[in-house]
Image 1: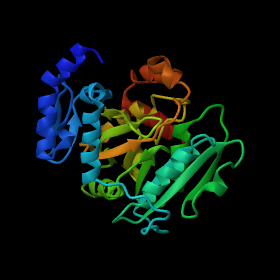
Image 2: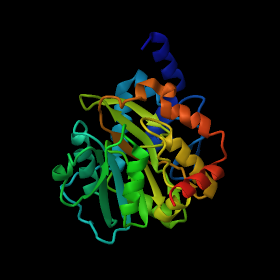
Image 3: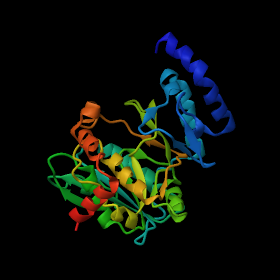
Image 4: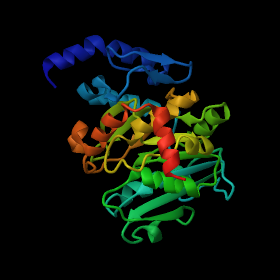
Length: 314
């Protein structure tokens, strides 16, 4: 970073960082010119798309300290099998997966799910492939669903297939590279119990680099992990399976979820994104076909999109 960036971060971002860390409210940290609101516990980002914490990019050591504080409050527990696995779960994790390349990330993610406390759960892994590549490699406590290979990875279709198989009243639609704190499922279920149909309790996604160090800290992520009441998810049409490849499906999902007026968007938990090579299409950014599809789709009222999806799934 240039000298100008370093001085600017010290002048504009360091005072806010110091206040947040000294008060124990790490979740209140944000960039200059960004506006947040709080319900007293979590933080809602009052802007539309994601952003990275600038101070953490300029001074990685400060980002690492923020990450340490977040996970000290909300620790991750890794386990071989859950102590609260159930055939009648309260919460069903649903994870889509394709290929052997990201199997290590998936297995690490599953260990953090196995470490969940205080809620009965199950975990469903939906594999999209030409053949059953990972079934025998999954821990025995996971449920496996095979979704025959498509032209490209269809995350939306994987989530829909897993939701159909889910037995919990609450589903967590979860990426195969996101490690969560031990009380994550409990907090999602609690927000649903309070009356929310759709829940996003993530405050920061801590993105790791290839060496396991901190690469960046993301705010206001639309995807990664989404909680929902299963019946409400069906009522808005689930995920749109016409999104193929990277991008767009989460934005469309939240547009439709917002029509219910029962969305919890105050993030207060940290999660960790494990490193992997960029997904096909991600390096194209806004030029990715799925993102372009969303740009066209957002011109249509969310209520109309819901009607189309529900009709399509009958």
